[in-house]
Length: 195
Ligand code: ADP
Image (cartoon, rainbow, N blue to C red; front, side, top):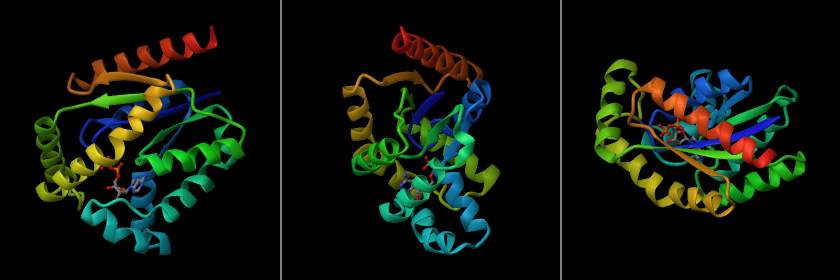
């Protein structure tokens, strides 16, 4: 059973790495951004409600996000563990997640931070917007998401660092190197905890 959290700014390659790492470890990937985009694409009431926040690059309100995560973390497919991507993004979500995990009798094993500087982030996301056309990848919305990351999500990282759970890799290396470094960092941290 391995329970991981991945945190990084938009454009750090967090989603790509989450996908590779969860596949390698045989654990379920839970991405709140993907979950919202799926709701949006299928026009569910949650998708309709979330759309304005996603388009503006704002955080979807906690009562919606946390309910969605709580429900997901109670599903029976998580017996090998999970990799959470995109939640918690604020310190109040850290408290909510602590509560959810306590209810289910689990806790996080390791938190992986993927770093990238602002210029590289904006460059990558503008490229992605040409390729994928995500509605929140315009320059002003990107800068807003980045600012929210600095003000709301960086304090989340400090919290987990304070608990001794944080490992960090540089997200600006090429994709395979980042994956290799991330797996190594995770495996070392898990072994340290087990030993
Ligand atoms: P990125 O990390 O590139 O900004 P994500 O796919 O993780 O992209 O998230 C896209 C959007 O989904 C966010 O801008 C936000 O509107 C919404 N979202 C995802 N996770 C959360 C969360 N934990 N709390 C609030 N909103 C969220």
